[in-house]
Figure (cartoon, rainbow, N blue to C red):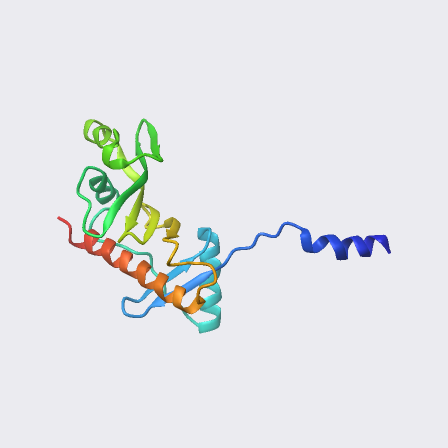
Length: 184
């Protein structure tokens, strides 16, 4: 009796690993966006979609320019249009990894280190159009995605927020792909 009551009372208070999963398809560009905490979860979602739809041909993103070179160029002063530097950069070379956190990259020694060594940028925090901030790595994985408060305000209409957030994400990816596919 005590065991059953304890389970009934305490089970709802147990730690549960909850997260929200957002998936949307940009039909114009044929891009599938999956917002989950890990690659494994993204694979689970795409596997589920394949089962439900019968097939889902997904190929990794590829571009004509190397992501490492473009991220490195961003830090050395060649950032474009709606993108601005955030406050994090990770650089690597054969000697190891260096990271700058919580410091303006416009006024940091990161640029000098890149120019005076063989270090290449492998992760970089960026902001898009003053609305969205994120970190991107050389595998095109966005992490730490955050939106300005007015975009995802509590109590707002979910559908409106989802559309607005989707529009900002697709705009950001479009801008990055423009840079990655056309920069000489």
